[in-house]
Length: 318
Image 1 (cartoon, rainbow, N blue to C red):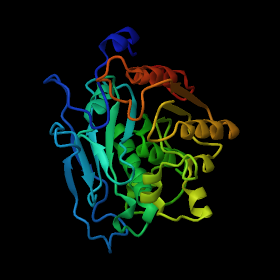
Image 2: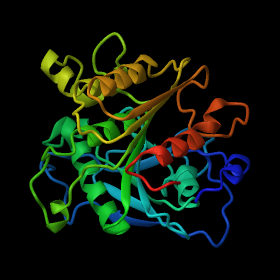
Image 3: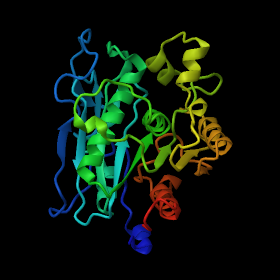
Image 4: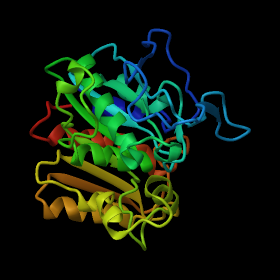
């Protein structure tokens, strides 16, 4: 049971690719799993070389941007006291790069400290020559979810959270879980890929003007996609009635991904009768997941998300 008072007063600065925080020596170390037993599917024409660089010259060593992903992975942080739940964490980067610390950073450790098994996904980028094109990241998300479910155990509730373009990918996993995006590789692929819940934060949602995030659309489906391609990869157009409960949050002053993306998604959830919630902060901009600015509203999103999660009928109380 989460001690909510301790949560409020003990919350740490967290965020995708934020500087690493001091961690107690007793915390578990992370472990990294390859998603695929060999080369990922459809890589015959891929010639890129995977690399990781600091996001900015003055970034700390674990504030990284990954490019040219040829070895997609799932990095696990195991909790000292499991609560029976697991999170697939999907970082963002506009489908141009993936911005994350190697172990998932403070977000992964924050939730692991609260009992979640956390797996951070390093996924392939659609423009690198993969045969599946825009479906390559979704292939990795489905495979990673299945591996995380194996690691969590048969009774665990396994969900997904994603940020920015990672929110789009997390939403695609939650809405297209039944779609077979790759040929069966081994027995792991016999596991279902439907998350028990989803949390999407300042997510890229639509590929349609006027609210599309231009770089994500360009990197995912090209500079001049036709109407059918736009519709297929617009999250608000792909919501099934059996999509898992979904929490959405964004800031009204987001100048990178317009807040209309989150509002469109929430409206689509309501049309399909999917259990959902939306929280729009008045300010916070894009990427408010980190709490280094103690005056910023983003420091409250874990509490809001966990409160919502605890109210879902499919969940045990948090």
